Length: 172
Image (tube, rainbow, N blue to C red; front, side):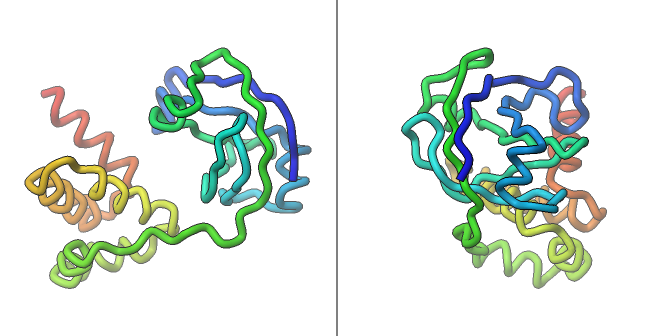
């Protein structure tokens, strides 16, 4: 387990990470968590006194990783950009899997190219799609999101690329 204070930061223009709020995990500390690793991995522990599990650390270069802090997590913490946060984290070897929704599995069965591309994605990227469906407040929104995902996956797009395309479409 590592324990340290970090300042909450936010990306400006940074490709698919534009606007992300995060804390930085220096290389030396990331190596203590998962020696020799340079790929994304999951951690658990506490942010201040808030328990966390299955949170992704994402490599950003030079051995440095970031822990993205989604709006819902920041709200629970009561923290904003520029504020300090105490991290007590350790490697999460058994992150809870996000179950595949039966209705989306049926959609993938009907679209082999989309299914093949979905299976090629890292598990964390598959989870982005599933969480996006599950966060829909209405059934029509959920169905629309699944259709958008099938179209994007048929074109070989990962979640971030799909979201970027949808934003561009909504702006025109």
